[in-house]
Length: 266
Picture 1 (cartoon, rainbow, N blue to C red):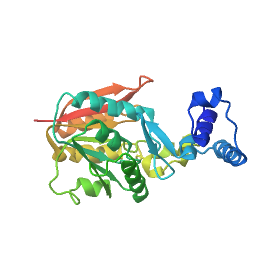
Picture 2 (cartoon, one colour):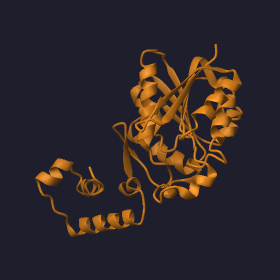
Picture 3 (cartoon, rainbow, N blue to C red):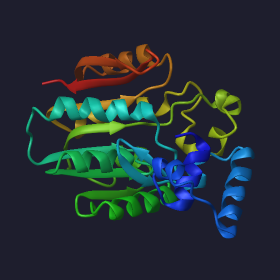
């Protein structure tokens, strides 16, 4: 659907085919809502914020300016995990999602792996509040534990002294600070803390990789989404720790290296 169709189907609560086949008309109130939506979009506000939701792998999630809008590239990350782990049959499966945002990764993985328990961390209390709403909407509150806290403190074992996981997954901020001003106008309306990865965009990868081995069970895996051109640097981080083997990469729809994974050393 184009953006106009998405707005109209949201206002009329109908499918795209119904919109055209039935030639539905707007009431005065609905027309006002439609006009307001168009003005907001023209001003550069992301369509997903205007609609109040987005689709992530067939799962409808609430989104607003408190959280980063889930991207199609992140679906590749989740698909890789689903493919690799459905044959492993680890039960129960313990998953750690670092920087959960809207909860999109945590929720889709919890829906797919019905015996999984997920711990999802975010520094933003606003993001955690919205992620909890999404978990409630999908009846997953008993299997996803949301934590509001600083990632470094969490990795320093200040919040969970003994817990271990079968996998760590993260789509951390990876935009270089100097590139933040060059982002498209609609992206600039998303939370800075969900985008800014420090001077070289790699701050969160360093933080996580340096301590992740201590959080993983034997044969545990770590999965990252990475920015353009960041694969060599993140690969070296894994190699330099001597804690990980089997470093692998997957390209996105544009043939850009987008997902990196590694297995904790035996």
